[in-house]
Amino acid sequence: MGTDNIQNKVHDLRIQMQITQQHLADALGVTRQTVIAIEKGNYVPSVSLALKAGKFFNKPVEKIFYVKH
Image (cartoon, rainbow, N blue to C red; front, side):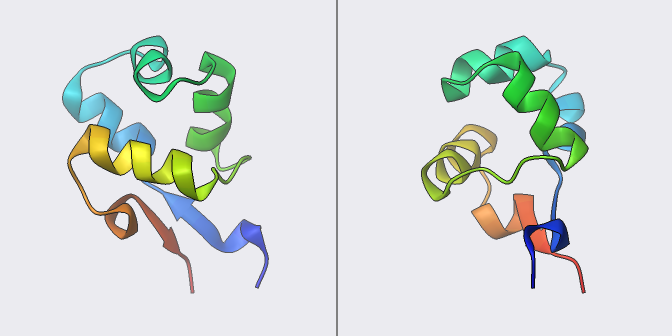
């Protein structure tokens, strides 16, 4: 199982919160380019970054990042 099976809901959650990619990047301590890559599925974040995203969105990590079967 490669990382290409990892999907995420970051874009949808960000849109629901009505925040910009830059706002999310600042909150997570990453660049806007990293947020773009995560949203496009081109980058799978580290465990620590995934946990930060979970805390920011107030959701369990597995509700944000999941394995596509």
